[in-house]
Length: 119
Length: 112
Image 1 (cartoon, rainbow over the protein chains, first blue to last red):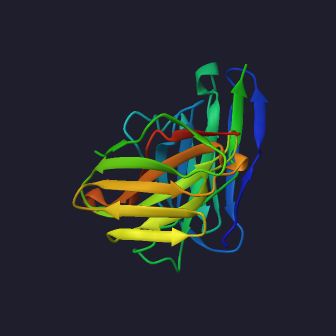
Image 2 (tube, rainbow over the protein chains, first blue to last red; image 1 turned 90 degrees about the horizontal axis):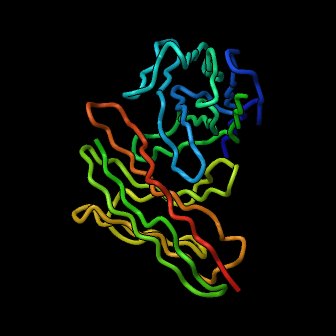
């Protein structure tokens, strides 16, 4: 099946710094990528939808200037958490939907997730 | 928006059968997924239903009733490794764009 690589797996940073998370589709072209955030014992909350070559669409309540998303190619999307604070500590997961998958089977392929801890 | 409900926790015995229910309310329904997630890991795909009825895949089966906004995941011959969170997710296209929304997840604990 399709593989989505997410890097890094975990990161610890100081408050005020920026952190970049990469999500790559390894064997398919990802026209759309999704970024989710998950707090402990809670479900995945969609943050934004990223389409290659266009601006990301953010969910209500998600600050687009704080969570910068770049989907510059069909295989790479990045999420940058700018000026991170302890409340941004969470598990961030990307998922991708690629070309070749019909509208009747919208199976997403998930990255392995990034655990962000802001001190 | 979408409203997805599933029980928070369930406990079952090894070798038994367990059914995890999910109810949803949405417009532009385009399918329902079940994912398994172990702590600290990404979700893994279990099943997909877009038409009414039962889909069977080994020890796992998933059922959908679109008119009732209802689905369940059935796990047979439970094993200890099945202890995980099970996420119900609804795909919908409100306003034209497909979006996958997750329920809060059901934490299943399998005991001896």
